[in-house]
Length: 396
Image (cartoon, rainbow, N blue to C red):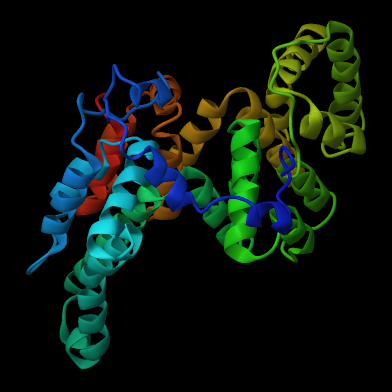
């Protein structure tokens, strides 16, 4: 199998994930100071018990939480919200082995049942709703949103991270309205490691029988030059080394300035080539040269072009590549501020960064918005949905 290809032939040569996880499931499970904790970023916001219960014990306790009348959501949060991706994968293998049903399917069935009860009720009694006060009707809808948000957050969190990002990208390619759906593709391509992007492409190909880059290229929602920019980003494989070429950084900083500031072409071919191919250390050096030579950071220049969506997309890529905490702080804030809550964006930002760098995101958020992520989430969410988000956000 080739090193980073995502073609179907290579996908079919990969052993099933459940077999791989099962192979390692007999190993001792440890918490923050053990083997499991070493896979957790120091900037991760979740807390993991040390020692953690065995996968079998966790699976049995999850079974107890979903059996009988009603679901013990707090028990699910307490277990799954305090486990790493590797530990959650082991729990999933143990659960399916014990109960012959995938864990994700169980969560979807059990958690969505609450939403279905409310939805069925509001659908069947239209005449009754017409006689109720607007506040009462609104409260019913809020209950439905709380449960559906909680289900989405829990199932996304429980998924394998690469499969989760593949699913988010797939959904983003099929949503009309607003360029912010393109943020998802940029996040997947730029805000994680090169190896993670390879894993996402493989997961996407396995789940949807097509390649991510081909689907982006065929997506009718994006026009050139944005489409080509997105294709290049999702199909890239950046050198993971720390080597930086100073002369190249200086030369490419000049190219970026010529395209972005002089020609007002933020997605000029040179820009796309540089941003989609260079390693993150090389890009940081290039952007430092840009600021030193031209007196202003490239993201500040792009942010000044508020009415230009191409500049906004390039700024998003620049932030995801070099300072992802800035981007995700903005995603969280924009999902909360204004009328209603953009639950999909809020969930995506917190779930996807909780094991990566949510501590840094929280620090950036506090500096920029003079409040905390916790305070804003508490003020804009409630119930089970709030519970899972606050668990992932961690102490603040």
